[in-house]
Length: 329
Ligand code: WQD
Image (cartoon, rainbow, N blue to C red):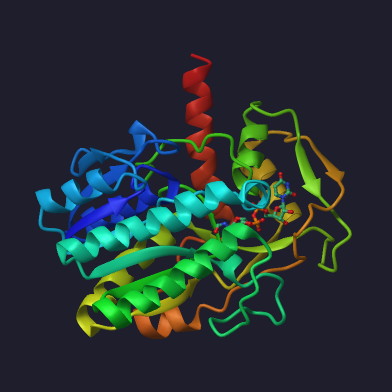
């Protein structure tokens, strides 16, 4: 298929591009490079620098080639920031997505794979979290993702669009073959923060609370390797094409890892001290989030293969270590 990957120069997007090419698709990346990086672009994929807030460039893009499908990963994703700057999230995440959907309608492109999030669920009422779990987003970011899932449902009903909304749990790790090396800028997520501390870009890791009701007191999350996530996009696109049926599905490893477990493994693999101090809990953080990915297995045949603690850390450390060596000459 001829696939336009919007946000394809970013952290998850670049991994999706790689797996799409590997599966034999022809790929063009559309990215405004606000958080994507050139290092993440593949020679085998086309590239269009453009913004989803610019409907003219979007319609020119769709007019210039015959795309069969869109993968849309262009969004702001910092949950904390979304509570302080909801306008930014309304415009980019919601208006930007509507611009994409409308440009797709004009160009008669009927398939989209959309990056949704476990943030649509909010505070867990039961574990593991399956697709039917109540949706009560705790932050505005999660609200934008839930809204977009609903727009997708309406565009399906009214315009015959088929979609896959993939609810990512905690994306982590780096390409399993080491082909993707662009680091995320100013990350707030746990694993890149641990890595930045390991290479000396940060002085220490702050552990947000060690008094949770979890085995070691630190927060437990479902970390899913970014290569596993990327493969999930390829499978989801195949599914909606073959079955002509939309899909909303969780992508998680079904395995909970604590902050302490990741930190200890990172210390072991990197051989670095990685200084850390326990500080107060971060507002809005639940103790434990773990996915049920039963539906992904049943419908897509998808299972996390690389999401064990060691592989998550090792693939990240390889990238951060090399980058630190380059920077230090
Ligand atoms: C993980 C754990 C922290 C940083 C976020 C988004 C969510 C989804 C995934 C996209 C928690 C602890 C973290 C640090 C720490 N994104 N932590 N020190 O909050 O589970 O989820 O990313 O859809 O919407 O909210 O991820 O990586 O920030 O935190 O102790 O410096 O690490 O308290 O237990 P989170 P995270």
